[in-house]
Length: 119
Image 1: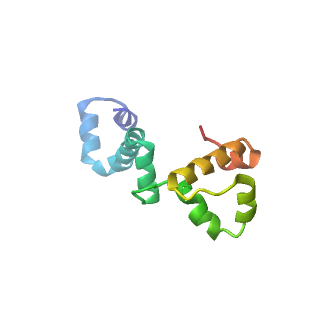
Image 2: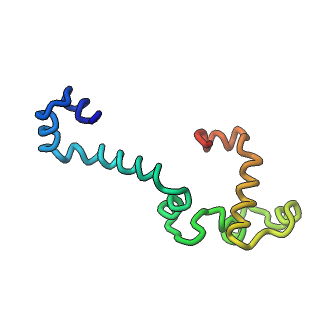
Image 3: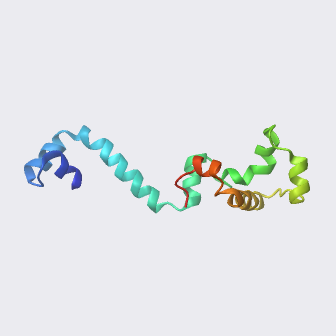
C-alpha cells in the first residue's frame, strides 16, 4: 500500500490499476518485502542452512577447529590447544567454543569495525 501511495500519490483504484499494469515495477519491491518477511519468520538455524548451503550443522563455527583452523596458516593449533585444552571435535562443541572465544573479543574495536550492527 505504501509503495502504491509513493508511486502514484494516492490509494485510488486508478493508481492500483496503473501499478498492476506495469507489474515489472513491482518486482523489486515485492522481492524486498518477501525476503524481509521470510527473514523474520525463519529460525536462525534455517537461515544458516540457506546462507551456507549445509543441512546438518550449518554454522561455520561447527567446523571451526576441525576444518577452518587446520586450513588457516595464521592459526597456531598447538598454542590454541595449550591455552584452551583439547579442542572439541563435535560440531556443537566446536560452535560453542568458537562463540565463547568470539564473545570474549566482540567489543574489541577491530571486531566492532567489521561487525558494527551485531546484537
